Length: 612
Image 1 (spheres, rainbow, N blue to C red):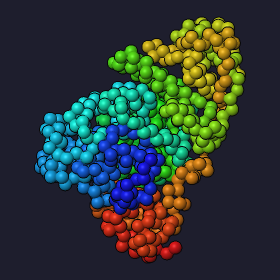
Image 2: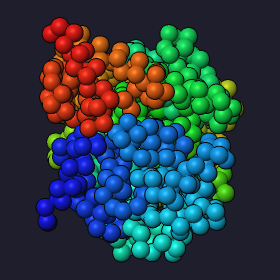
Image 3: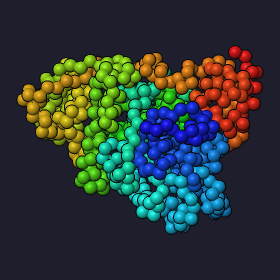
């Protein structure tokens, strides 16, 4: 590999305040700068933006960034402007006069980067405009949106194949944080990148602690999680329905937590106001449907919580990846139960998708259920889904590694449960089956004569919570399936025959008689190492507080998010090293030439006026 051109490293340092690349960034930047096409898979917070921003500055012309997210466009352009880059947006938020001025600047060659929504780009007027301009490259962000197999398919993305047809000599880069092998293949085919190299960075986010708990009273569990682990910190809570979003947000507010709802049923002004508060204020918790989050560039989200099961591991990874973009310890917490599986299966079965689409969706759901039910390292299971191996022995920063569950021989328990499903006619859900197993004489049990069956009362050695855990695990193993057409009735599968005959081993994660909602406290060594981007914590607490107060005021004056002014990691670096000269300040990661020019004297004065 040839040495990186000095101009690239020079721009990396002078514009972005960085002295070195991360991971595959250097190779991607070189490949794109030299005119090559590529597909890039890189986790949220892994530095995707730099992979096209830097080549756009190195090549002649303007880099065109296709993004479906108005909020992301706005924040990225604000951050680039702070760094001295000529960047603009072209989307529906602009007035006709503002749009005309952006178009004029593009034709005149006054822009380094232009962010465009896919719908706008595909308009004949916009395509004609691009043909008149000098284009450095096309960057297609959130490229998984092009795939019908992906978790966030957007039909307008399919039209982006026009870029390869009308601009064959302009390099193209497609970027996403999540895509399994099937999705990658479709991205490459639809965007004419089948002959282009695919750069796949590690999907590991070691600073994120994964924890999945048995759903019992999910709202109370959530309140305890926030109060014990993340009081006063920013977070996102995902729910499946709009009504649940409103209920959860209200309950959190009643508990003294600064929570705001976000869903498509709210008017645009309210959504924008809540999103702006989340981005610009400290300690706001957004309770949202999946309508919220993609493209949110807030680095200090300390937790992402799920009160309902996502559709797939890709969706789970994308959503949890919004935590801890700054590399500091963060949590991905989910409360999960059997009803979640039934609900998701019903949504798949009732969808208008083809049979092939439904089969793929069920496979993706099964993979996520397997992650939720595993007794082994969750990070290993998560990374394996994306084709990546983690060292043996686990990650040391998930609930199963920090507090390993006990696994026991569950063959007899499984046989009792499967026999109960069979003898009751495979027509009943979990609650009724458990009533029969523990010998509970409910009206329904006596109505159907199930108190006369040989399986009535054979499971009194376990309580309801333990039987629910066993049921879920047998569903996850594929020995039972939830029939969405029969309101969640559990049915035997082909593999259950081997269990009933005693030919198949069954190992179950043991469910304690009490609540399994382990409180995971403290930081693993691995998480601690991931959380020190500037070499060691917050440094001087008084200076750190003064810097954050200064940043908040500057952000308010300039009308931008606080992290656009300075990232938390940059503030940590200043507080840790206390630079008293401009040259020393320039050595802090995140301080480029323009930020030094804009804020250098104020920051040095702040350091000198705040005692160590």
